[in-house]
Length: 344
Image 1 (cartoon, one colour):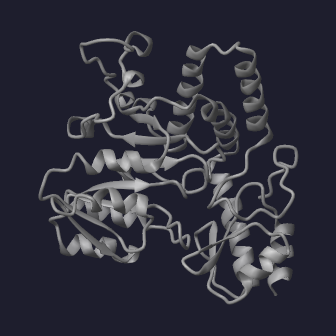
Image 2 (cartoon, one colour):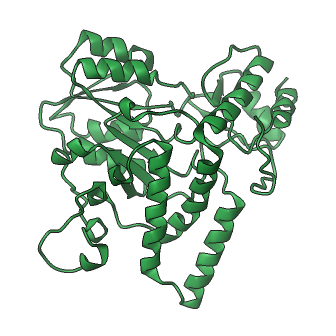
Image 3 (cartoon, rainbow, N blue to C red):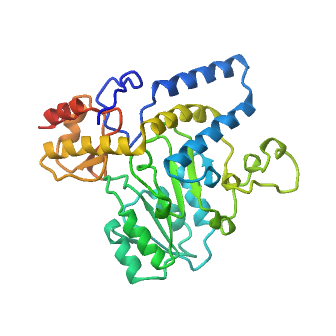
């Protein structure tokens, strides 16, 4: 499926670097320009940002098929992972993935004197859970940042349920194109500036209600209040009953840009975007003599490819010593064929 999005995106190159940062759609750019103009003219009405953020919360909830009441907003992935890591009791055991993104690993590792962290290959997670039922949490990326490997979420969540292990997913490289079900996780975290095409500085956490009894809102602030604008001064503590109790005070301008991006993704649909992205990635893989995959990211550990891409003005990246190409909704089959000619 090819999307006709020429009017929404305007890169000056072939852009295959969404896994580093997504491109803004035209509506995002215009919304942020208008907001800057209001700021410059002194005409901002700050409480109006709440409606924008609530709409973003609802759209993200729709993308992952959960109630909006389960969604907290923040600025990056690591603070939300830290929220969970700091809630674990001494002696807790966490299973995670070798070479996973360090924002997933480090918040647990700083507590190594109190909790146990074991790292295995991504493909070995289900078997490890079946062999050892003593883990409290599995922490992993749904799609690996370094090479695009997609976790077998069905197998992991099924094994976790059999051993009463809870699952926290970093879905930053997955939401918008990968089908993730509420059965796959107990807590899900997503930075929005990559595959959700948003400005850097907006992120989401989906937290199931039963966890709210065990995860204290250690970043409690005015924006987490039950009534936001009546929670800005004095005692008593009065936090929201929903996952909003984990909200952090928002950077307003990035949320203005996030809303049009989420509206576009919601309109196109996760299934259609996923089919498009994976089709392009597999078209490229076949052109390189590789087997098909279920990922929108292609990792090529072949000498000289990154130099060829750079010389031709193709935007990609190098991760873990390999060229990383990521295909998203604004890419086309023609671009794939052009890149194949460049690297041939």
